Length: 269
Image (cartoon, rainbow, N blue to C red; front, side, top):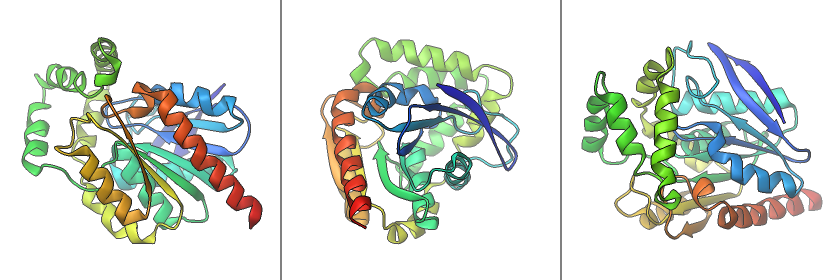
């Protein structure tokens, strides 16, 4: 395991690299950290892949000095990580907001992206009223308490562990400068993803938890995005917004199928 800092515009990103082989870059959801991909990474490394786990701007062990946050900034960061590691093209696995960023990166730099894994993806804005209300509720001083309660509902597949993870991440966000960076990230506008959808040529897999509370109809949202990208869909019963953490065996099996298909296609070209 190698944990390093990748310099990008405005600060440094924490990047944890495991294993050897073709590169898979993993980026988590807003409010979460790179270890959400830990169980999936373990399985991919065992199968012969090199996995880079990236903390979002202002999250985890990345800097809080950035002027910009959101889908477009995260897309730029994913491209920078692939270029820094020097092993492109790479597969990008993005969760929630990072899925939208992965789409932007693939649309803008198809030479660097061989496939997409989109987990609990936000590729367009959801309920505008709910989003506005959440941003108000996350304002200090009550914001951390609200987020801790809300985030505990995101991962039903973890059972009681969801509350433990929510408490852990809330403590991490309480460190100096973190809550401000997180609050700025919550103002994200996913409409920036739309122009890049028709530009994606890489094969894609949409992985959606059937109990994802962020969508009124998770299956319908997955089907919409799959139609936009000509992607395959994996619906995972009993899990929510982090399928790779809640059901890593199920997700890993399907992701490895995609990676084998990509490797086979590359070998025939």
